[in-house]
Each structure stands twice: as C-alpha cells, then as structure tokens.
Image (cartoon, rainbow, N blue to C red; front, side):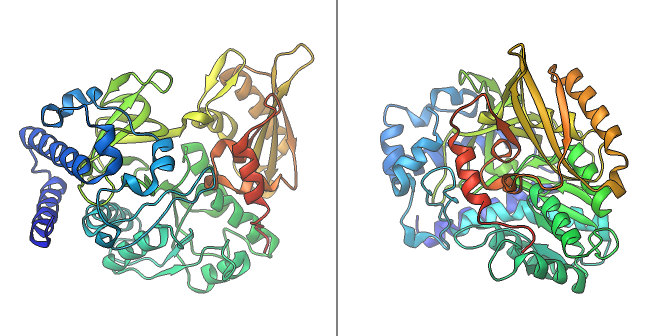
Length: 470
C-alpha cells in the first residue's frame, strides 16, 4: 500500500470512529463497514502474509461475510509461535515500533505495529481514559503512575502516548524494574501525590504489602484515588477488597494482548466496551470450537479489521468472555465484554468445573484487608476434592480472621460444592505475586492432584526474580 492510500485509509478509520463515539453510525453502516473491512483484511493477509497465503488458500475470500465466519479456519497461539515473522502482512520496515510477547509460557512472538495499528487502537483507550478521568477528577488532570514493563512491551508506550495526548502528567515507575524497586515506587507515589495507578491486579496487593513492610499506611500516606488494572480478571469482589485496603477504587482499564492490541476499554461503571470498529468478535465453545454467535459466553475469537502489519483472522484468544449489548449508561459505545478467565484456568472441583472469576468471587465476597490468597486443592480421606485457602490479611481492616474464615468456608461449600479449610498465613508463597506474568491459576492455585504443570514451573521461576519488599 502506498503512502497516500495508507493515509486515506487511516483517515477513514478516524472519521468513522468520531461518528461511532457521537452515536451517528446506523445499523446499515455497520453492516457495510464490517463487510468491507473483513474483505479488505482477507485480501491483505492472503497477499502479504506467508502464513495466511497457505492457511486460507482454499477459501474464496471474496465470498466470506461477517455472518459466515465459520468457513474460515481458526488462528491459534501455536500458529503464532511456529510461524513467527511469517505471520506478518508487511515488511518490518513498514512498522513504527517492534514489540513481542513476554515469552513466559512459550517462545516470544513478534508483534510489530504500524502507524494505522497504533492510531486505530489508541483512540479507544483515549476515549476511555477521558471518560474515567472526567468522572473521578472533573476538569483537574490527575497525576498517573504507570506500573508495567516497557522494554519490547507496549504497556509504557501505549499508556504514555495516550495520557500525554490527554495532557496528564505521568511517571513510569514499575516497581519490579531494577531501576525503581518497590520502596522507590512508594516514595514517588507519596511525593508526586499520584492519583491514578495503572497496573496488574496482583500489583495492588503487592504494593500494599510493600507499603506495610516499609512503614507506610496505604490509606493515609498516599493520594491514590483509582487503580486501573489490566492483564488479569478484575472481579467486583477483588475491587471491593482493594477499596478496603487503599481507600481507592479498582476498575478494569482495558482488555487486550500484545498481538491484538486494545480490544476493549473500561469505563467509570467498572464495565468494558469492545473497540467495535477494529474487531469482529464471536464466542465459541472452548472444548469443541463450535461457534455460539456474536453474543453469549465462551472462548473469545477475534478477527482484526485494521489492515496493517499483523492482522489476525479468527484468532482463538484462549480467554473466556461474556459479550452482551450495551446497557451501561456510562456514555461510551460498544458491546459490553466481561473477561472471566483463561480457558486452561478452568478448574474441576467435585462434580463441577469453575472459572477463575467464580472461584475468586467465592473467596473474596465481603472480605476486606486481604493482601493475597492461594488455593491448595487436594483429596480428603475419602478421596473427594478438598480445598485449603491460605490467606494473608491486614487484620486492622479485615477484623477477626476467624469470622472471615467461617464465611469463606461456607461460601466455598455452597458455591463450589467442596469442603474447605482456611489458614491465615503471614507470608504466602511468592508465586502468588506473579499474577499476570503467567496466569491467574499459576499464581493462585496449587493443585496437588496434578503432578506436572509447566505454567506453575514458569511462575515459580518468575517469582524468584521479583520480591515485593525490595
């Protein structure tokens, strides 16, 4: 694509997005947009990506419509790891910046981004953050602390670019970097009077642990009003627990990946909205791959509609999600999407199979002052499943731990249908701090029924590199 054509196409996206956010796009225009963008992307990838040239060679791409996506084969994470640069639909010299996945659970895969990728993705994050900041701070611009990796990773660049365009001051103070560390991050939070922290859910607890270890009071010594979290599930029960510790709200900032960019963004009501102009979304049965349509609960499958360096077609995200109509009322458009855990993180207990969000809700419902938890699954004397929950608590906030334990045991029995015990542990396994680096399950569940879990082994290696008290 020559420069003039690229600019014209980007301008088309920008114009359409402005009409999207002003609520002017009609149903007929949506049908036309989705159909035209899908055909454009299919042509783009079959002509320019060695992988898709082979993968879709038996498909008449001119006849595929958004209503019959099932004729297209899935793209999987295994494809990305095997094909590497052959997934790309352009020369690396056409990209503006090179990223790659973290490589914690497999080979790192290249994720370069071109100008259209960046512009079309970031506009949705900008609209989201403006919505959130206006709700919490009015006309005042907050001071923001960015806590996430930057080298070869998009977190710092993406959020830094967007908050700069909003006109808000930000500091990149990832506490797990060698340059910063937890104590320095906490001192900067205090001295800069940082209002907003953008981080993983696990970091909310890790920061609180480090604050207590270093003599700070999370509620009294800091100005934080809002945690915007990403990288893991964010249940309402988790958010309420963060509020109890920090006196600050915790809301989902976005859902996305290095490969897919900004898929959905958060709002002031704690919900997330699909970046609809950029994706065709569907849910499929995680076990059979059968399509369940564009709404409902299942494994999220995405087709990217931005024809730049690395669009993916029917990509199985390995994430469980619920997609439904927009009933939010926050002012942002787009279908609502709730991510409820990774497909491999579903856990068989007793006669049921439970998603991460269901397990976390059973543990944390009504609980405050929890600095971390680990669920140990084993067998009782009769050979049935049994759960032992290890908790690290701030008793000044939580109150008597005996009462907390009694309520938790009852909820686990009622909701998960297994017997449970609760142990208050002043020093949890460091693996619980790893959070989004590997997976919710690897960080928070120790399943003694399983002899070998490569994700857990990876999380154990990661845990040795990060100490929250440094």
